[in-house]
Amino acid sequence: MSNKTNNPKRREVTGSSSSNSSISSVGAGDNGISADLASLFECPVCFDYVLPPILQCQSGHLVCTSCRSKLTCCPTCRGSLGNIRNLAMEKVASNVKFPCKHSNHGCTVSLVYTEKTEHEEACEFRPYLCPCPGASCKWQGSLDYVMPHLMMSHKSITTLQGEDIVFLATDINLPGAVDWVMMQSCFGHHFMLVLEKQEKYDGHQQFYAIVQLIGSRKEAENFAYRLELNGNRRRLTWEAMPRSIHEGVASAILNSDCLVFDTSIAQLFADNGNLGINVTISVV
Image (cartoon, rainbow, N blue to C red; front, side, top):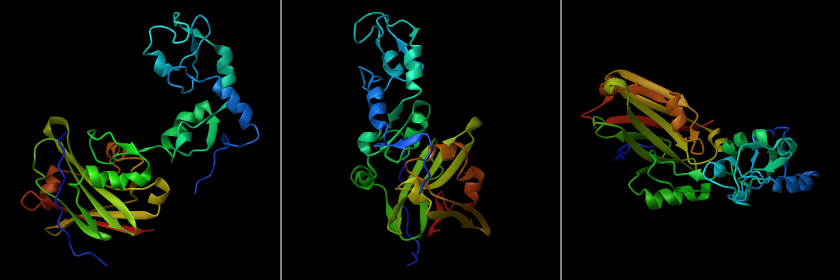
């Protein structure tokens, strides 16, 4: 995908979660015993946990599924890995609470292995990825360092101040897949506006516009955004809660949970190949 950062022009600017019963906080009465048992499941290669289905080598040594697929022999005894199920360890694993893999970043919960993956994918302590569209930037880090990263590594992104601005996407007729990105700063927060054009079947092009908060999901619940295409006595509007950059925009685009329009609609509102989108952020 080729990337293009717009050069927007500014318009007049006007002036806690419930816990699942299967998750326990570190420090609970049985945590010491559970931690001791969990240590028995540490993979000798990556030090992550070996979770069911658990396979052992002929000498009984364990290795996690991810590392196992890359090995030709047991990393402990150099014997054949084989396909022997260790049913006893699987039974023990079902009664152990494992710490979240983001514990080093501050997460203090432990949970049964069947819910570990789901929790970790949504964990607020999970490192944030660079929110810029495309896969070219591999940066990740804590929320406090997202904006410094954007300011240092993505200096071409324009930032406008105010809750009511115009996002101007230039040259929307460029061929292929294109991204337009800008930042909006208001209410003490930063919002990233993304317009993405994708090539669909038979050359059909689709536009997706969305706003994401440089912040957590909980913080995003405090805001709403409105996108509006306006011109030639026509109006197309979309209103929603901004996505957290923890979620990203890929799933929203996949599910069309954003402002969606095709090339013919874009041409109705465009001016010489430039498309202005009115963006309003409000507190709810």
